[in-house]
Length: 219
Length: 242
Image (tube, rainbow over all chains, first blue to last red):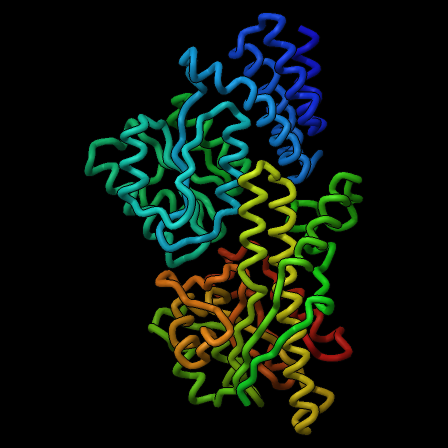
């Protein structure tokens, strides 16, 4: 449908005003919110994600597109809530206890929402109990943890252990990231995946939500 | 010498190429008009919301030995332990650009202005480094005034959390320097608050003492190897300030 293609293109251009107006219009045309989300908003962000991974565009372009995507989502969100339409999955994210850095975690959250995944952002300085308790209560698929300090990395291990203790390991997957974190560390602590950067982190969350168990190593 | 140094924000010039690099845009790639606008606005916002202030305090080699040892968690062998023992003068320092800029970054993210927030974060990170460059220049000038430099003198700075000096080194550094006086607080995780702060030691001595190879075991985990650039610049710099 032409209007869905147009919305997708305006997302790629970061034109949030046009995305908002056209999303309203698409609803007037009786296109379902789910179809608008999948074929316009997520489709636009998929193109952006692909170009970013291929180094054709840069972080600011991704973030401008994300703002446009959010403008469309703001129009659709009340309908999703009212009609109880499920999103692609649910992720609980946060910077671990002791860590106040949040830029990387914020970028992952923005890109996850851009992929149509519901995000519960617990912010910074998040204790293990809060990660696990929230994931259990919200029935989340994935816990995403960020650490920028070597001193806070051990908290990630505690979250993985707590999930095991509560017998949630299979149901709630874990993805870790941040400058001092590595694939090796993820293997050591038993995390399900490691994201080298925000884009890789999002790909890992999508993969885990799809139920792809194979480890997709990156560096 | 123990001194609080107020740095004029007008003198702090974030490096455009470095900010763009943090945004994933490699040098030589022309940024789009949209990115140029974001960068311009972020530079203005940084200038409006930052109040750089620093504290610097000289420390003897034996005193620094205690600070450096910290909680005993350093890597077995590090470049700094070889360097500081050959120094002419050492000074602990801490510097912050304040908490207003971090607050502004948070507000931008909360209002979905992600690109502006991310750009301001990069500008503030590099701006903090450039403010530390100015503090380093100030320290060099102090040494010049005292007649403690010659043509081979160079200053480089090193921080806990980098190059094998464990992050927990912050504890002893803070006990000795007491940067709380300028509003910098140390959290249990050894992170500083405000977030846009730097601490460490400035090492003044002959250029050659700063030269080391990036072949320590922990260098394999390093994503930047920025020491290479710093050492290269050491031999190119006219004013020996890196």
